[in-house]
Image (tube, rainbow, N blue to C red):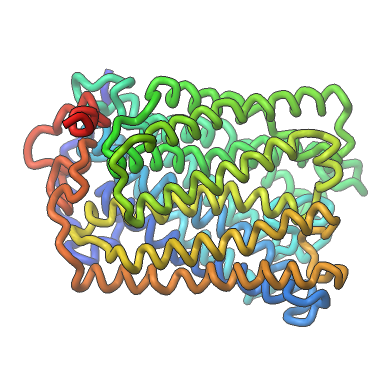
Length: 539
């Protein structure tokens, strides 16, 4: 059984606005929606990055002297929420997923174009509502985890707006996940087998399964939390007999898979970029597929390693320690496959490959500290310290965000027909990589020596290391400038890329750049070997 897109959907596309106006419309074109996701997400990234800079400026001194304590809590909450729900998740899933998946399966569009458009248009009002809460009556102050009883006792209006915003964003993710699953499984071109799909399809299939299974749990949890706040119920309020540990179990049942919702698509994107710029087949395709699906299964059974200090019984600690250690195995398989893909290849030193290599370095380091945190004695020592902050950012920024930039440099010619400037791209990478490691590597030392996270004031002995971290954060902020200059200059007067500047074999490059509305002028090509670069290596 296959799903076919209704012809009236295609006719409706032809009646929609043309030129730049189509990016402000309720478009049904998956390519337009992908770019809408990317630009919208990047705008929220600028907001979240500004908030991060404010946090680091506050932490440059041990006293709370840059902003009041309650404002610091609001900024911290908004920063985490924006970066996760409005930047990384929408971009690695919605932006690149929408743009690439129909090409990869040989389809004209996503399975449900209208649902696809609805999924995007839930995001801007959700983000604007979240940011506006700061100016209306004060934003939420309980952190992006919204743990009760703190989330129940802080000002209610900001917390309720936070809940509504996250619920809408969760609905967007669920709509997108359903659409990706249907598109990958039911819209494949005749003759195209599952084990012939580009790796990003498998990554998005696994990610979408996690989204559909875990996001409704978060939605139900936040609805119960809102009842505690507004209706004075006692689901999680300990004063009324509620159980705060139950909230943690429900929250982390979603929020640990959310880490893989952010990094699995990044794994897939890197797996598309490396073979092209190394001129080698992707090493271990089958093992990569099974490792992705292994992460999907194990990702649903490791949530309680976030709760080793929450009165977790010894048998539960043992189970989640073992499960967390096991999940390092499929992740390690992918690392070795990426290195093997690069080994002996004709590597092109460009912005895309540099950001991909930066991702591999950062993610391996984050993975090592993750294995350490899975061990109960060590976790108890560093729990709720800056060691956890450093580990988390090495995974989600050093992982996902580095891949986002790598992907932009790689697929920008596809979407625009122009090449980005490589000199500016290398400057962007260098400042980002140095700034990132200068910011977050010292935080491991801070955590090991006992500096708590999520507080504006700290022991003066930590000031010098915090100042180094703040310098790194400001470098990361500065790194955005050459990137923006590069994008605007390239769009206005960039070098023409041609249809396939990388001489790639994956389906999106086998049509014009930018592509036509229906993706191909004729029948979609059947690509049985998307990584068949072996012959070019042996010549």
